Amino acid sequence: MTLQTKKSVQALQWTGNSLNVLDQRQLPDTLVYDDYNDAAGVFEAIATMRVRGAPAIGIAAAYGVALSVIQHFAVTPANWQQKVADDIVQLAKSRPTAVNLFWALEQMKALLGQSLTNPPLAFIECAVKIHTDDIAANIKMGELGADLLAGVKGVMTHCNTGALATGGYGTALGVIRSATQRQSLNVYAGETRPWLQGARLTVWELAQDEIPVTLLADSAAAWLMKSGAIDWVIVGADRIAANGDTANKIGTYSLAVLAKQHGVNFMVVAPTTTIDWAIQNGDQIEIEQRNQNELLPACYNKAGSLVSAWNPVFDVTPAELISAIVTERGVVLNPTEQGMRGIR
View 1 (cartoon, rainbow, N blue to C red):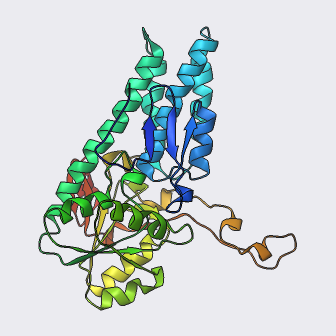
View 2: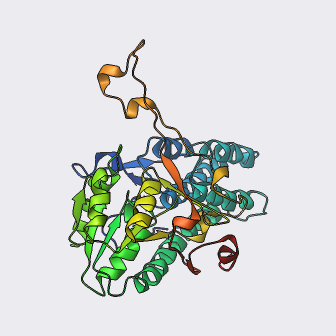
View 3: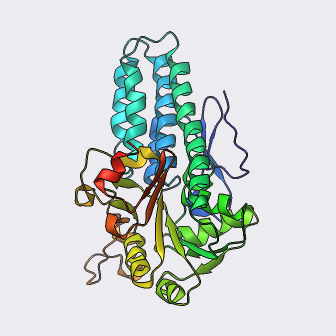
């Protein structure tokens, strides 16, 4: 069973018995796919950010479980469920903030307790469904978000939220894709330090779709807003609390504050699988801290150095700074806990 989408660029390609993962760390200079045949490999791909973006992480993890079933059902048919359960626990440790990861693993875990005629096929079909459902949700969100952009002249986005970060169309970038099919739109992308997902991935991905885009330094966002060039900031999400507080790539919160100051609207685009209904607000969201060596120049990466680095991967934007949350189930304007319940 293979899965194909209309997009030429895909972060994840399921072959039927392995998962091809586009190594996004090497883009845009090199386009290379790594092939994984077990859950341990998929864990490594997620942890090392070969695959990134909350929806894509969840999809990759689901395929990782399917690969675990293929492996262990063939080798240890008597106790394959326990082996797979162990792999699920390990995959859950790959990235702590993206709730899509845990949602996808829960879907796969639910199959473990069922009586299955053909376990490998059942788990493969579940993973493929998670993948295809994500693409369908992205396209729906793209249209709903584009409805809000009628007559808009310019938008800015942060990080990468396109086909590379999802099943194959995009969340925030999906809205931009859909909007540019309806109208002329000036698109600006922040570079997104320290991993430069905006500079390396977003502008490259938009160029693949022949959508013009202007790159700017993260620190130039306030001046861009003051110039009147943009009407909306459009971002994705890694976890959304029940009240609408949103965790996303570091730098999102500052953009929301700047947008509020300059009268610019702020849109969050994410599937409902990104909403964590178990947490009331953003204070309860765990923020991943990555190794300081990712940020420090090499000369400071040594014992006894007086220079250290603080390297949070995400920040939390309060709901009161968000103009709209767009999901496949509908749009929540000026989100509150009560408004969020309407899409549950």
